[in-house]
Length: 226
Image (tube, rainbow, N blue to C red; front, side):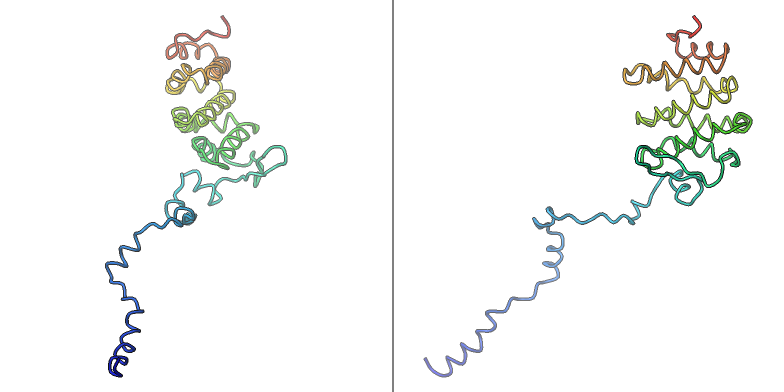
């Protein structure tokens, strides 16, 4: 082999070892390619992403401190810690907000809303405080009663009975509008006993007038006094 041939071989050898630079189209294609390792190690969801930050009105109010109580985790059961005595807190708008919160399906909002609603109605003079906002509270409860989630419905049902125990016959005006969803759930074996018990308590707290209202929506209902 001549010297010129050997020199030519040495000058061309490095070029054969180097890889050509990828084109822009190849780079774009590689970016969309899913590697096996991607499936085994998926990207972590960003908790601060816009979709994660979206929340309900109740959750937003709670996160901003608009609900004057917080969940306290206990070794046996949870409880609420109020920032000030519930007796000193106006029912408007807190009771309405808590009733709206009964539609929540996530913790801690589920616990805070149902426990807060119950405890607020237990304060002295609760009836006088609840009566002026009764239409709004009843409308909020209906939102829970018509909810597709069974747990939400049960929280709404409990809230309805608790409200009835406090305001008594005053709830009868709004009762017919609330009974439709109870009638539908009564057909479900899972909720039948709970709905029947609630209807009996609604009759007990609502007086004689409530019986006619209940039977107008649920003809099969049997009075607790019959």
